[in-house]
Length: 506
Image (tube, rainbow, N blue to C red):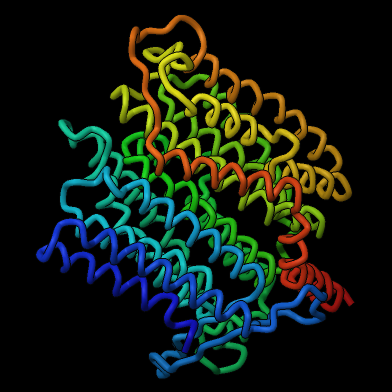
């Protein structure tokens, strides 16, 4: 029952936050932060009691902790939650970013505070559910839960308080793209379930059972393609990126932390968890397409980032570039690259979330996102320019940060299976450095446009930045802690895929 608390606590924390605003305006934020800490404590309890180990597991799936409750048995739907080393890492990342998001919103959200924290906690509930749901209907349920609260977060608490039209337009675009993604996924799940029913006369959405389903190659390819497109829309990968730039530019920076830090990572997680294991026989057929889309996203995202004058759009397109690298890591068919994938997901989430926070602080002080109107801010703000330089370099993969370790492991692993792709992707590091340094130069160097303005971040903003810096440095200097912890799941997925393919080929 402990696993069920991971979704029950944040859900009811959001409801209580919404209702408590009638008592006192500041209570919702306290309820939300307490709810996340309680959920974190439950996760730590599961961590210690779930026998997580660093030794390789010889079979997949190997769940360290499970919760199975009958929900709709007539349709083969269970409230089935499970957790392994990979999913628990994603949970800790979600809690960490969720706490930071609430702290950033602490004094910034002054309108409809109860409803804001209700939506924020509902988003976190959906993200947590995606990471621990094993029943595919339940997975789809949590995937879709995220849609509505994110719509309200951007539509009601966008950056432009005077003109809501652009924020609503961005929210509508996100809603449409997400609905298309969800519809494609639902069709794919139903095709998979009915295919299993034809073979066994058992109606089930259980991931563990669907893993051993033998599909016709054409049917398997069609279902796999549906999952593939659905997840690419949410990553997002070019050409499915149309919703991102407007959505990111219009969102408040505390909302951006959820978008970049948490929402972007559910799609790579799902792509690795489901496409790699449910469709092992046809996954290699789409690998060239995935590699092409990944490389194209890397370079095109970097080019778009370099051409932006809006700082938040620049960060958004830089994220697309990094998502391209994550995509080719998923389809690399190499265990070293899979380990790099885990480090890259964590470190990219932290560095990009940090840049979102700093861009939000700049907007708070100067009321602009236009890079051309900034210039020379190094002499106007204490600490923030130095923090921005560090996170920009970390985003570019400078040694000593987790981004460097993740990129190195991914490129090194890909070189063993796709050497040409690895060489081309390595060149992207240059482009990443160009747009990162371009951003720093245009914002902080040159003649100051704001004379006699000296600002300093408050203690909360300062401590958040320091914590994020230490986190990235820890990942850069001691990545083995994470690599050891994720070893069993990464290895078991890799060997499951290899073993299944070999058995079919014989």
